[in-house]
Length: 183
Image (cartoon, rainbow, N blue to C red; front, side, top):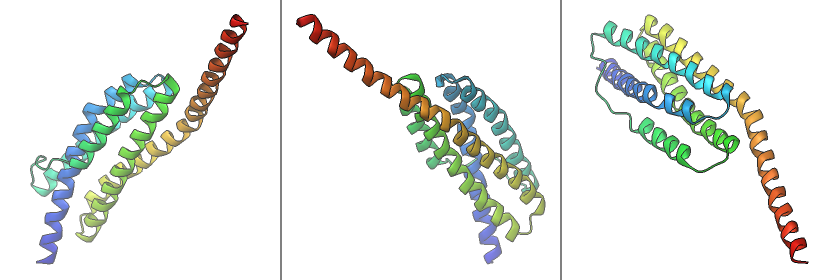
């Protein structure tokens, strides 16, 4: 009986991830479009291709289970996508906006990493070795995406910090020009 309960939980978690991934298929092009950094934009475009593969892998698992790949609305991903959309609508300078988008994207990746780690563990306990292999592939890709975002954040965050300093210098220069014009 307990194994049946775990199987039910496993299927529910898979449905949640499936919905999360389908939400991302819609959100990633918007993130790419909002990015000013070409490498970041390219990374989102690449992750969109991967995300489509993640959806296909989950569909394979559902087929093996004899289940429909529909159902549960992933409220967690819905919230993360909404936060990301809010971030993209902020009036930040290019590098600062890119830094904010990376932060939103990494929250998404960490959410997915947690979800895939959980279902992989369930699949192992349930003896679903083919599922484990498919889920492990996706989990590794999610971790790689997170690492790439961290690498990009290094240079983009520095650029954002430097643009802040430039803004401060510009403000100071304008103040000095106004003072000298008055003198």
